[in-house]
Every structure is written in C-alpha cells, then in structure tokens.
Length: 445
Ligand code: AMP
Image (cartoon, rainbow, N blue to C red; front, side, top):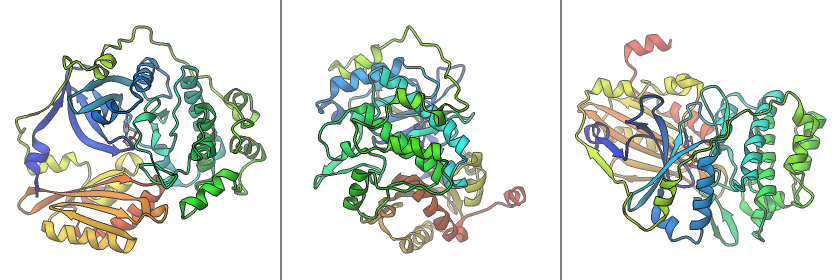
C-alpha cells in the first residue's frame, strides 16, 4: 500500500518548483500543481509533464520549438500563459500560469446549458484568444472542453495553444482516436486527413463549443465512431427550440462542412449576434521575453537539464494531512469546493483498505467499468464501444494511520460531461465508507 508518509511527506522539487498534487491528466500526460519556491509574489503554477523522448524523436521538433517560443511571448488575457519550460533527461516540463476556477464545462455539468448572453460572453473570449494566436501563426488544432479553463474571476483562459504536436492522437483503422474520448469537436476535413488548414478547423471546433454551451449537449453524438464521422461530414445536427434565430444562423455558418465556404474569424467579428455587448480585450504586449529556456530544452546539450529531486520528509500528522484534503466527505467536495466538481477528489475512510477497494469495485461495476487492480491502485476503464464507455478513472488508497485511509479519485480519460454524470452515481455508492467527522457534519448541515 502507498504509505501516506512516503506519498505526502517528502517534497519533490524540479528546478525552483515544488511539485504538488495532480491537477489532471490530459492528452499529453500529467498536469501537476506546483509552487515557485523562489517567488515572493504569486507562487502557484501548473506544470505539464511530457515525455521528452517522444518529442525529440518526432519530426516536429522545429515546429514545436517555434510554437512554444511564440506562446511564451503571447500575453493575452484569454490565453493561458506559458511561463517557462525546463527539461530533464527524460521529461519536458511546461510551466503555466495556474488558474483556480476549474473547467468551463464544469459549469454546464452542474447548471446545465448557459443563458444565451452568458454563452456569448465566453464565445467572444474564445474567439479573441483563437484570433490572436492565429495572427501569430499558432493554431490550436485540438480545441475541446478540457482546454477551456476559468480563472478565479471567471475569465476564460484557453490552454494548450501550440502544443498540439504533443497530443497523443492516434489513427487506427483509418479513424482518429483522441486520448480523451471521441473526436466530437474535430472538423470534417481533419477527420478525413487530407491535409487541412488550422485556421478553419479551429473555427469549426469553436462552433461545436458554442453549441454545447447553449444546448447543454453535443451537436454530433453517436454511439460508434463511424456513425459519428458520417454526422460530422454532413454537419447533420439540429437546433434545440430555445436558440435565437441569429444564433442559429451564426452556428450554421460555422458548422459548414466545407472549410472553403465556412465563416472566417473576421466575418465572425462582424456578425450581429457576436457583436452584442462585445468588449475589446485590452492588454499590453510583452517586449522582452527571454527564450533561452526554450532553446535549452530542444538542443542536445545537457548543460541546462534539471532533475526531479526528493527532499527529506516533512513530518505531518494524520490530521494535518486530512485538513489538506479540503473536505471530509464526498458531498462536501462535490458541492462546496469553490462551487465546482473536481476531476480529482479525495476522501478519508476508517474502513480497512481491502474493504475500500471492494466497495469502489462494487460501485464501478454496475456502471459498466472494467476494473484493473494493482496493489492499492485501481484503474476503472469504460468499455470502448461508446462515448460513455471511454471514461477512465484512477484511484489510489493511502494509509494515513493504521485505521485511517485516504482515497484519491482522478479522471484520466473521457468526456467531461460524462464524468460528472458518472461521479454523481458513483459517489452515492461510496457513502458508507466515507468518514465524516462530527464537526464537519455540523458545518455541512
Ligand atoms: P490538459 O492536459 O491541458 O488537458 O490538462 C488536464 C487538466 O489539468 C485540465 O483539464 C485542467 O483541469 C487541469 N489543468 C491544466 N492546466 C491547468 C492550469 N494552468 N491551471 C489549473 N488547472 C489546469
């Protein structure tokens, strides 16, 4: 079993950053919360960890280097800022500004569809981000809900611009499989792989995103990939009755299967529906951005490599440890943590570890998950046939004290909206094993 002292007590440092919990697992690998130990001001960052060999052996090193350099120079309010890049012998670390407001789609999972005006405001910010990066020659190529984050003021931040070459998209049987589920957001010309223009395909994905914001569900959804492809190729979708006619007209022009006649960003900026209550983004272009770190990551020299190093355990008792987990019960995490559902959550239990493992298994099996166990880690993998089936969840049990365990649950793959639906049912199946302290009961009642 993972001993809490080993897992939680020692510090892992990379360069000047102390690595913390895993924030998520995306198409590149893990994203970790980290703290800049040298900073006197804002010290929270997010670090994307990527397999270095995969990048260096790809044919796209020059493109990746160029795009990361450009992204480091871009300081746009709606684009997640790259602060620095570092490399060890085996990994590349992309240090990003940390945003604490969760994913935009958590909002939909909780509240359902957004009001038209609210959806428009997010869409305007999305188009501003995409337009600006395109003007710098950087395309996203993989816009999807996981890339739309919110800061603590609710401002939209688009992540992963310029990082598409790292993405673990694979083609099997002539079909595109993305690391996180099916390609619901991908333009028809990308699916048929005849070479495509990043500008128009990003516009298509923005159209799918706008539809989901206003509808609360996807425009193209089918249980199997071939049927989904057919719908996307023909742009075969229908509008729910609550969409205004101006919104419908715009979405129809965006979800045009022909990239040559599809609406362009300059035309979107002139569209009446889009322009309502539009606020011009205001920001200053950073002039002196040092790109030495980017050069160092991509050249062969070992001079600037960092290494992950562990520091002596910081002693922490069980109660300090639990208080770090921010909540004592699933409900508490589910409802109260910044009003958001997290992709990663923890709870404590006084049940024996074996019993916790069996309960998790019992709760997951009826939901159609295959359970793979290894020691006190478990992977719940949906069967691959359907969209829902693509979900994957990792869990791990840590021993905090002989009769106290902490359980971590993390989404590792699958559609965000589906994950939220799954999590609601799953967590109610675990109620019996979650430990709730008396003081916490009072607080939450
Ligand atoms: P990605 O690899 O970008 O799909 O990231 C995986 C997950 O990590 C996202 O869905 C977010 O929930 C989380 N995440 C990524 N970047 C950040 C960030 N800069 N700040 C906070 N959370 C992040």
